[in-house]
Image (cartoon, rainbow, N blue to C red; front, top):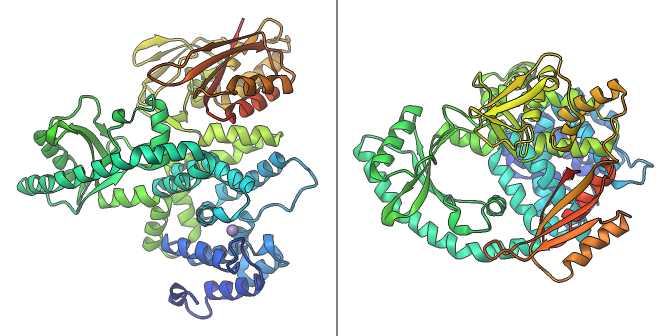
Length: 566
Ligand code: MN
């Protein structure tokens, strides 16, 4: 028996769950050839290390029993009680539906999971531990399954961990999925970066004693000074935004200073800025204004020894733990304060401002009848890369990347969305299809009696906005028809390669979509990317979405976007 199990008494839920799982999975093997029990045991150990309560550890041990053995949920309820049974049920996939479509199955399973975790966040934490172990043993699965799991992790589970403040876990999940999902890109990146990392690490080591000495001279005693290398997948995403130019990435290796108090954070920052001049406009105070997922820290970028540009992060120990373990750290903290009522703890979580979106999920998911639409919207509305913008009342609103003032307006209130006639960003008037950026101060101009426009559907990003606009159009029943007068224009950015155009045009012809025109620009010298523009007739949303997925999956393609044109 695993050593850590011995910290639970013999008649405890955890010990009982262990015996139960051991019997239930008897004789079963994982693809790796190990006995099946190693899986629930590893998941339970992770949950134990995150300091979750006994019910969670027991549920982790039992999480695959209902799905993969002959034992029923009823039996779990009788033996372990409602609480454990609820957690297990939230972690159990639906029985295979007669519905043959894989995507529908996946969507329904995720909807069930979303419902369960919006009621009890422990479901999501155990699920993430489960996914972590599955990824670590992914190499034993067939290739197709590997891709499927890696993709789902990058689109749903890693962003979910991030939104729950578990940034370390989120990065780990992404890095484990990366080589399976983008093997060639991963190879390229790891080769390109290896030397850079070594060189940067050596540099960080060199300046560390200097930083320590200067801080001590000013009476600040740091608890730790570490260097941290940027993770591969997050580096990859950043490189995509920076022309794949690694010279432009200043936080490849950042120096991290951990101090005792918030006052010390600012004092240390002052000392650093006296020592080395900061790069203008690179300073970020996430202590005064935390990220929407709760992240707190000071970030600055300075010209340090030999004029090298270096990012420095300053935070307290508490901030550091929260950054690593997010919701799990809060959980442990709350638990140590009051061991008594679980209900109370739950409401503490549910009412945390940065977790309001979890509650919103419950109502939000009801609006979807089409499972595919639900899944796509979930990815965009909740889990796509986020930006955060600021209201005139100084409130932070987080939105999916690419969101426009109209998305912002509908996020604030449906009436503001409906009556929106214009927007100011940082004091300047912008068009309604303007792409908002993090840190933008957004003000919506409204006019009483104004109605939403169907043309907004072409650029809005959130389904909240889409649903309101659609509802309005249906109400009006005046049959606004976008199709006859409009065409679509696709922009595809790709690494140049042989056979690329053939692959693209084949997808159009297979989907029976007429190509009106096709233009390519020769590979741009600096970006080493080629750009392809394709015009085609208007497509309905379903066809369009499927086409987008296919285009994005073409080998070497980096980015696909479209717009409606006359
Ligand atoms: Mn499992």
